[in-house]
Length: 338
Image (cartoon, rainbow, N blue to C red; front, side, top):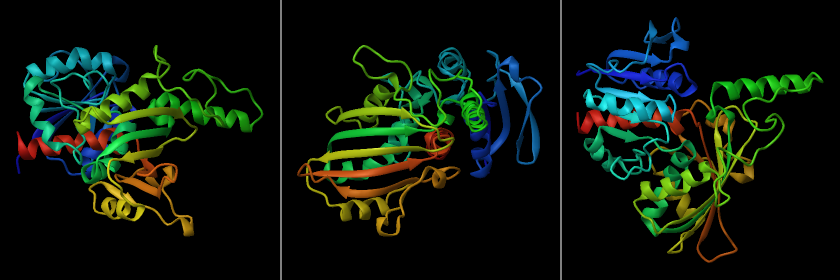
């Protein structure tokens, strides 16, 4: 079997760790794995297939001989190093927001628009969408193909792991402090996250939306290759460690019943329908955590409009929302193009 030299940039972060695990779990044909991070990570090692691999400092010459680079070290790092890697012959799959809306860089969810991967030849870069966008479009694409979605209204309930390791630690420390009668320390978020919900993810912009909300709106249109789909979003950070949950309401051009939606989604790649309300069975973040599927439930018709559907969509934000999607892109890349 042909093997590939793979680099993980930002290997010691929450998503980077998950990328390394996912490469191993999916038996990606790695010939040599390079783990790259900042100088702060020198001395650290990560386990891969029973071997301890030392973390190296990310430098401009780090990509010699590397064929695939999985990037998740922040937008500024990607903006600097992705083009350097691409010039060295490495195809970059970037998990930051740096390139998502660049017109000639593909924005890809393999279950939804795998054909867009072919555009990697433009710049040598493929963008991984926002975590909350990924799980939503995986659930909605089969419906869009069947009856065309005119409008999407989504509210998200996003886990702290989407912010990173420091946020996971802060939720844990704040919870312990409050349960011990102590004052919690607030550093990562503008307010306490333990036992609280924050209706702000990323910075606010002039239209009153946050950058996270606009990412969902713009990325959905680009992935569907359909600017006519109207999208509005409210994104909320909640005191959950792993797993984003979403309340999604859609209006379709043609009528589709809840039963038909369940049938469609039960055959859709990457989707698992978890929908038996009579027995209190519906998607939960604790069930999605550590898994690869996007869980969909609470599927019902919106009785306020003629052609409307409500659903509840849950996925592991570090896996399908980031690491898994990136590795799946790389799998299509080596199968079809490299």
